[in-house]
Image 1 (tube, rainbow, N blue to C red):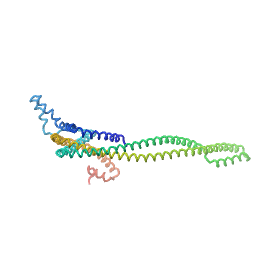
Image 2 (image 1 turned 30 degrees about the vertical axis):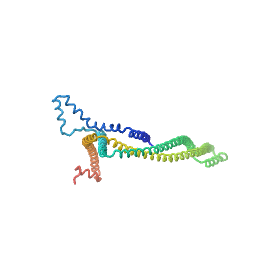
Image 3 (image 1 turned 180 degrees about the horizontal axis):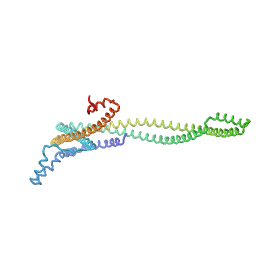
Length: 376
C-alpha cells in the first residue's frame, strides 16, 4: 500500500494505452528511434580520432601513437566508499550490457521470421492488457475505499485515545492524593475509630496525672487527624473506581476499533496484492508485446546496426570486466588490511591473556601459533 507502488501502478495504465496506440499507428516511426542510439554508441568515441589527422601536421599525428600501445590501462586508487560506488556502477553497467547483448542476439535471430506471426502475437498480448487493466483499476478503487474507512476509524480511535489519556492522568492524580492520605492515616477506619474511642474513654473517665492526660489528649488529636485522612482516602478511592470504570469503557471501545482496523487492513492488503500482481502481469505482457512489435518493425530493416551494436558491446564488456576486476582487487586488499589489523588486535589480546592466565581458546591458540608467538 505504499505511495510509490500506487503511482507506479497508475502510470502503467497510461503507458499501456500509449504503447498500444503507437504500435498500431506509428510502426515505421518507432522503428527508427531505438536504432539511432545503437548506431551512435560505438562510433561516438571514434569521431575525434578520425577528424584529428585532417587538422594537424604529420609531427602532431605521430605524438599520440605511443599512447596506443598494448600497455594495460592504469586505474586510480580509490577509497573504500568510492570503490563501493564504482563497483556497483560497473556491475550495473556490465549487467545492462550483457542483457542488451542477449536481447540484440535475440532480435537478430527473430529478424527473418514471419512478420505477420509476430504481429498476431503482439495484438493478442495487447488485448490481454486491455482485459486486465479494468480489473486492476477496480481493485485499486476497492483498496482506496477500504483505506478511507481505515482512516476514519483511526481518527475515532485517536479521539478515544485522547479521552483515555485524560482519564489516566486524572486517575493518576487521584491515586497520588489517596496514597498521601493513606500515608498520613496509617490504618483503616475501624482500627482508628476503635483506638480513638479507647483513648477518649481514658481521657474522660480515668483518674490520671496531668502529664498523662496531656499525652492522651495529644494522641486523640493525632488519631482524629489520621481518621479524617483515611475517610478522605476512602472517598477518593471511590472516585477512582468510578473514573476507572469510565476509562475501561473507552479502552474497550478502542480495542473494538483496533480490531476493525486490523480486519480492514488485511482486506486492503489483499486488494493491494492482487492489484500489484495484475500490474506485474501487465508489465510482463507489455514487455513481451514490445518485443514482438520490435520484431515486426525490424522485419523491414537491415541487421547491420544490430551487428555494430553487438561489436561495440563485445568490445566494451571485457573492458568493464577488467576494470571491475581491478577495483574488486582493491576492495579485497582493503578488506585484507582491515582483517590484518583486526587479527593484530586479537593477537595482542591473546598474548596478554596468555601471559596473565596461561589459558587460551582454540582460535586464540591458532592465531598465536600462526604468528609464531608460541612455538610447538
